[in-house]
Image 1 (tube, rainbow, N blue to C red):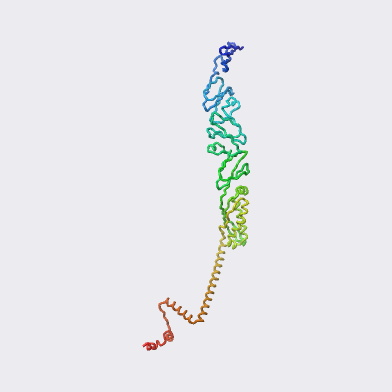
Image 2 (cartoon, helix red, strand yellow; image 1 turned 45 degrees about the vertical axis):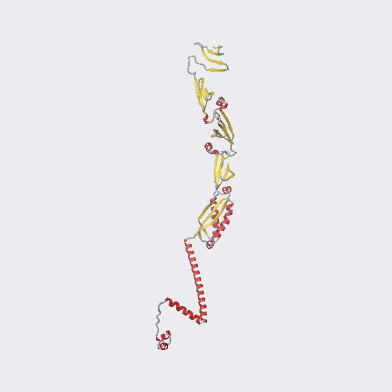
Length: 420
């Protein structure tokens, strides 16, 4: 049997329980003005399950007190004393900014403690404190502490341009959420969204949102001139002479998108074009024609390769023949041919000069025959040249020949008498 005993001073009541051992206190309640403090039952034998429990909460903490596994009360910064049985606490640090708890726990928290934000599939958010980005939020519902007035949340749309990337922002953004690409001055960038080309990028830095629903890939294409050497091409001329040809080609990408989509490798494609064109030309000419006209081969290669390369988005600047290598026996044969040609040419020149000299002598003889004085002068000139080159002349003649060499009358003394 239970009886209530009123207390006129406190306007409360005391609830007693009858038992064979006598009455014992079951529970009591005191009503002071409009606030009721309920004290759990205290065993009559003075059990130890009843207690006061104190909680100290720091400025950067929030506490929820639980009793029997259910949230009982939320405690802010300060010192708190709670009476009850089976009490335990759960603490959160407001320094972490974002938290996630069950709805029953949020129900006992004051609304001014935290904020709530819901992000759609095409939205992201950045949590700032003191204007410094600290957290990145993906789609979903998030709860964040508003204990600090400097805390704010910036909502971003992945369909719009990304904010300027600072070092702090790069530190919190997940790498799978964006693409940061720098296109150099000599490059062009191709931006693909889910495998589809959307635009061509010029030089600069491009931070772009990228996620599972809209995966972005940027490919840089080098626009500079490239030099390629086609060395050791085994070719056969029209007259069945095998030779090795070395070529050089200079090209550059003219249309980045077309070159990327038309061929897997621009270098390999240009290499093949020049190789096939050189085979077509060499097979249509003889060895002599090839050696005599390298410029003709260069013009043929340009006329054949340039239009085909332009259809692939590639601009061919120059194609030229670097070396023509012949087999060893062919070199010997060509050397003999060249030697014979040179010798024949030398003989022709020699005969031509001899004929000219003979014709000149015949003309001279004819002139001298018609003018004896001129012949005598030529003889004296020849004797003068001979006398200038020798010191003495010995003439061996007989007595008869001596009369012809000396002046008349020298031997018989008539010359001396005439002198006296």
